[in-house]
Image (cartoon, rainbow, N blue to C red; front, side, top):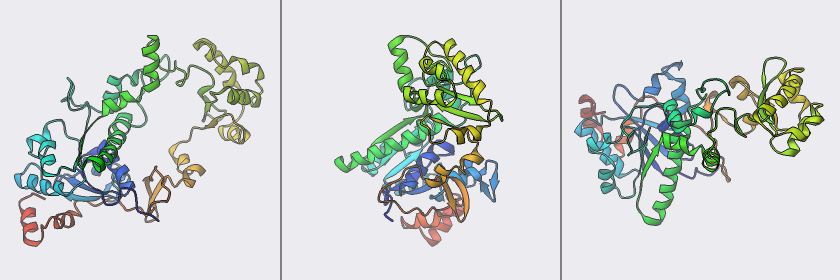
Length: 389
């Protein structure tokens, strides 16, 4: 097995909760050495969320795997000085404080870039480093609301629906933060200098609008929920209830898939009625719904197996983790024989070492990390006594 493509890259993760944790999980899965820098006595709040497995949360087991943990009080001058020493030897630093916090502590981008010109510094915030909202508090649903995503999510005649996963947090902050970091590391190989990566969760959510915003800007028509090509306007792209109360996804967008589906359902008269007005889409969907109710979800999946109709089940999580494709792609991370969460989603050839490491105990790597900058024995004991680590 080959090393991960980020082997040898040292990442200091000062973030808390989901966005930064997901960002550094992506980097750790690619081989980076991620050191969680946590506040003494408190740590990352995600460690303590219910439900717990032993001492720590299930969320920490899933999000913290493959990382190391040290404690450091950044509010103390001594702690800030230690961070400067760590950053001098690091490749990447990630933080999720509000804009200006790190500067007030004396360890912001300007100070660190002077110390280590190759450092890539990523700040993940709700609204970015500038603009009228830069200092506002927020959470995922706030970002989706501001960005317009919430307005197009949900039933046509109902209220906006809260997304089942945190789109802004993970897609906007975590994933796009990782993309920015990777781009900055690539650029560093050409220029010898790192960059500041400004990752905003609202910005990232807004960027997900892509084709939706493009259509609005071209037509001037403000879209609503379940009214667009890919959100339920047409019968060929909807969720249907089967006879047992479970659900099926139908994504027969292309004419050949729609034709095959209509023929399989015994509705050939609908082949030429794939698209039309919203009212027409509802009428056609009602015909499909009546047929889908004649069998259970799994009976339909079996009956349509092998046909190019783009139909699949709506799995719950218990079913998803046992799905043959999930198992074949090793998408469930197992450590010491126990499943802990999603596994690495990016595959490489030649494959990287698949051995996964557990999430770290709180501060268990403090001594080892500090030893790498020459802090040992009596000096380390003094830092502990003063609450610096």
